Length: 84
Image (tube, rainbow, N blue to C red; front, side, top):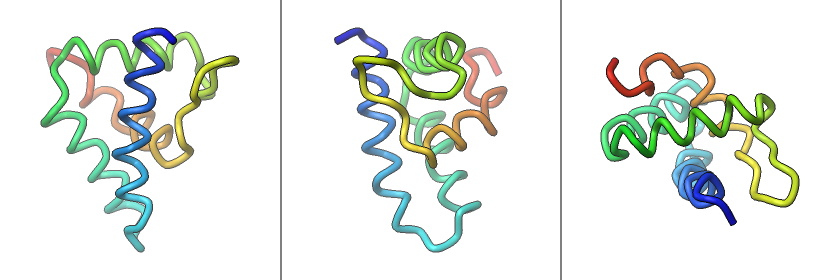
């Protein structure tokens, strides 16, 4: 499994926690906040590279991003980009 696969798995675990939130906006913010605050820039860049290579968040033969995680990262892409 590639480094992307490990990051996708980590992002999905964060997403699983926030899926329990009744308010989707709050869940999306929570996912983005966690990734922005606790992931180093290299990790965020690799996750965004995964999305560049797989615009639907799915990768054959590897774990795909959960829908809520995909939506959070896509909506907050600029904010999650290193250097922003």
